[in-house]
Length: 427
Picture 1: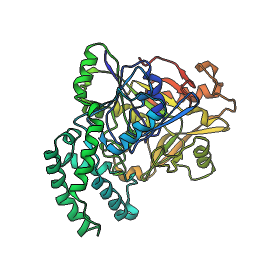
Picture 2: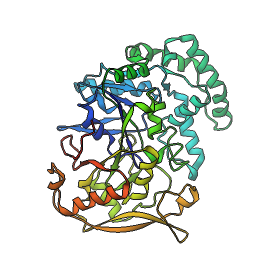
Picture 3: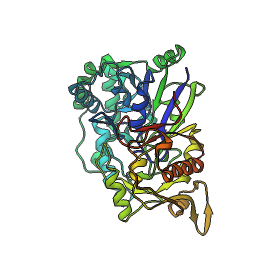
Picture 4: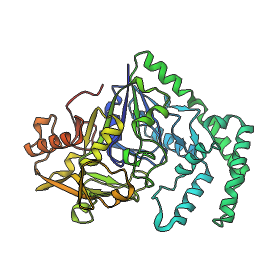
């Protein structure tokens, strides 16, 4: 049975948690393949709301095995806290699997993240300050600490000591901060070893064996396409690959085993942090989208920047991810607008541009070219099929589908698990 990939088609926060949870009952494994606790998913089950930061959304589906893949960076304190919180609410977390090759976030990663961002001032990236970028930097520099290192005190001691030999020089001499003790870091992290040992395994082997046995594997990205370190709005991006290629490297599952790549697409556009955003609204419409859509970061609590739907970005996401389907979320939030602008192209220095410009400078200067679609006022949260939607809402969905380049196979009409219109089955 081939694997499925589910990822954000904008700047993240599109509602991936709802989509993953909806599919959770139909799949055997849900794999988080990149990112860290800088990405948050909100999942509503009945009258219960769950905010997940590091754990895969599939952990809320009883028959599903949740997996943290090798491409994730793990803060063990956050992991254990999140597991404890779910256990207290009666959620079974015993099936969780963690790759021994996943890298760890340490206190010195968090410290460097925060002081560096402050040092950048107006040029700051808008990171969450949780150490994700520095942890990935250490991974690429081959001085990272992996989950498996927790189980060999000698190796852990050597690696932390080597990392801090350089980082303490930077902290003390450049940022005027106190040096971090190797002994304290090692002692703290050895304390996590026994608590997570039962979850750690060769997840790549487990997943490939599962696929060979006909099991269904869903790979879930954090953040979104435009935050990809290679394909996003660099440098205002995350430090990993949320795009579909990252699903392979971050899980150990080869591309020939992937059958569908599903892009989660919000019916409007949001982003958190710094960087260009052509359709951003700095007016009453933007405030209304933020308030009605509850557009506040799950992990950070920061206000999300809000804007109209951007078809240029959607087409780009289709292209770089090889998307086969879209899951359109939060259509209900647009109820009540007399007309709804949709960005169909950009104007850059007097030129009309219909594809995302590769030049950072061009994208910074891009102005949206809008088409205006008629809105609707009817409540759509009870809709169970496309035909249940008002005609104008149906037309809006069809227009977005045509502009984006892939079929819309599901539509979110409310925050709850059941408030979804399924047009085509994903599994």
